[in-house]
Each structure stands twice: as structure tokens, then as C-alpha cells.
Length: 297
Image 1 (spheres, one colour):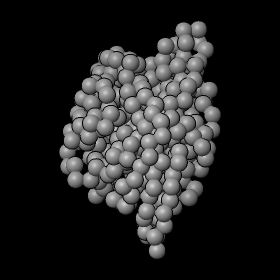
Image 2 (tube, rainbow, N blue to C red; image 1 turned 180 degrees about the vertical axis):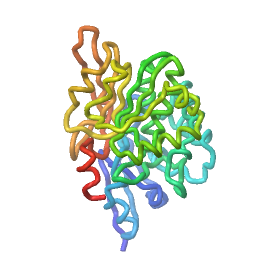
Image 3 (cartoon, rainbow, N blue to C red; image 1 turned 120 degrees about the vertical axis):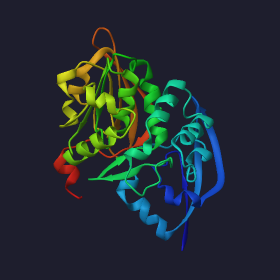
């Protein structure tokens, strides 16, 4: 039995295994920045519907400001560099520095064995957590790029398998500090193993990159204040400890909301006040306690 769905204006997320079932019709309604809002007509079998019902595949990704081509799976692209070039081709990556960093940190080292690492899709990493799609990593890196200069400090809340923390470390370099905080100890151990295999291995060894077990809602005061704070899960509201640990002139990127979520860009002004704007609509797993996250796992 086939079902037909029209998603507008928000398509929450998709699993690469059903991307081949997208219908060929799209309608561009308006543009914002380099992205396009589209309404998509999707047709897929009832067996594929099971993947959409699985909450592990309905999380962690910006989906509304992209063209149909940007939604298509990048299956068959076997190299990390080719994945980055594809994101550049469709205007997701416009920064040469972000492209360089994403090329140097191989995504395949940070996703579960046997998965398709270069698909533009979120992936479950266990413990009711996900790694975001490459286009979301690229989006966040570009939003934060000016505050990821050599010598700066970056905090990655909900660091998962360590991918974005490694990218931050490569951008701030050995004179800077990249800190990952994750409340699942097994993921912290996995992140360290992954980073040790990556281009950021020397930064982990010299201590300028570190990953810690902790409640990310409380930040990581030891290395505060931070020029950058990235939050990889959706908070009902922006946690005050993260605002407190953001340096004046610093920037935070955080998804905010419950059922309906927006990616917020938070800039701290020189007088300590904050300015908040919405970048786009997203769908992430919730920023919650370890116990709540594991309750249904």
C-alpha cells in the first residue's frame, strides 16, 4: 500500500533509506539566504513509513530551507571530499575554511559501522542519540566560523560521537580550546576513540581538545568563558549557565522548542546583554537528563 504526503513548510527529517522514493516534483515558494523553502510531495511504501515512526530518525536536522536536490541521498559518494564538494555545489557550504575542515575530519570515523557515512542524513548512534546530517554540521560551522579563530575557546554540548568537537578543535588549533560535554559515558569513550583516529588526534593528545562526562545544560565552567557554544539537542529554553559561560562578543547556536523547534543564534554583546535571532526551523532530540534520555532505550 502506498501513501502520498505533502510536507509544507516543514519536513522534519528523513532517513537515507527512503530518499530514493521521493517524487520528482518540488515547488519553490520563496528564498532566504542561500536556501529555498520547498513543499515536497513524497511517495513511499508502508514499510518505509516505519522509519519515519522511529524517533531516532526524526531528529537533529534542518530541513526546510533546501532544494529537492539537497534532500536527495548522496549514496554512492564514497569519499569525504566528494561529500563536501556536493554540499558546496548546492550552496550549503560557502566558506572555504568550513570546507577545508570538513574535508580534513572524515565523517566515516564518527558514524556507526555499516552505515552510509556520506549520506546527507542524520544517523542513530545509540542511547536515543543521533549524529546530525552533514548539511547541519556545515550550517552550524558557518554560523560560528568568525568565533572559531585560532586561540579561541569552543564548547560543544551534547558532543555525541565527537565529530563537531573535532571540527571545532581543528579550527581553533593547539593554542585554542575545544571542549565536548556529553552525559552518556559510553559516547564520551567512543568520541575519544573516534578522535584518536582522526586528523584531530594530536589536539586530543596535547590537551587542547577534551571530551567530558557531564550535564551539558550546566556547560563546562572549567574552560569558560567561551567564544562559541554549540548545543546539539533542543532545549525548551536557553539554559542560563550557557549564557553565563558565553564570552562577550561570543556566539551560541542552539535549537529551542519542543514539538516545534527553531535554531537560535545567540550573540552576547559587550555589555553582557544578548541578542537572539532565528536561523531556521529544525528537529532535534531533546536536551534532557541522562535518565530521561535512556528511559525508553
